[in-house]
Image (cartoon, rainbow, N blue to C red):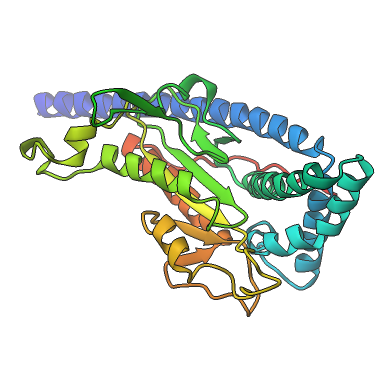
Length: 331
């Protein structure tokens, strides 16, 4: 009888020890995640300040916040998600203000024309990044964000290969917006977003890099046995273990005021430049737009970003972090 009691006590002590150990590990993980979140917020705040300093982007930012207020007044339950589908309207409704800024700068002729084109592209990229920042601040997701790959990973994320003559080539990623988790784990996720005002003229470089990335990430079982496979001939390689998701978003405004009021998503050249993307988004929300089934509203990218992080946490055996959210910036 005494032996049974003793054995029971030993089992209880072991259970108690395992519980304490589990709690200690959980506490370490939570502290690490909170530190990770704090670090990402600092990077986000730095990017937000940089975007707010851009004079030509400021009209878009101001109208972004006005649009958020309007959506909230209309009863939107998730303003910072819904507004992602209104960015084309914001870009177009600030166009005349930007034209005035360029005229006031003294640019004329071809210099003025180039400034208008450049401002449209950089404003759209900046507006998409700013809107994602405002949404991230309503979450507890520890993503960092920026217009380029993380400095520490830029060489690692460059694609290398060999051409038909045996010469080497390298292709840097076509990144307009990058989201990443600053973690020592080599499997932490990276999300690239190529943001284009139009796709006919601008999507080619993004498409090329995406195809190289697909060649690197392929799980095809025949690659090793087929010497003439393009992957073997070009020896395409990215020296990273980070899983990369490359998406594309467009304002879809190519010739919107003339011959293509419905947008360019049904255009053959557009399809040729984007078929390799699994995640394709548009920031238009008007009834005139033609949107093929494979295209989604940019507001849906928030689901993708959440799912990627949740899958990453699950791979580490970690429960989602519960943490206070930041308040998005006002006007």
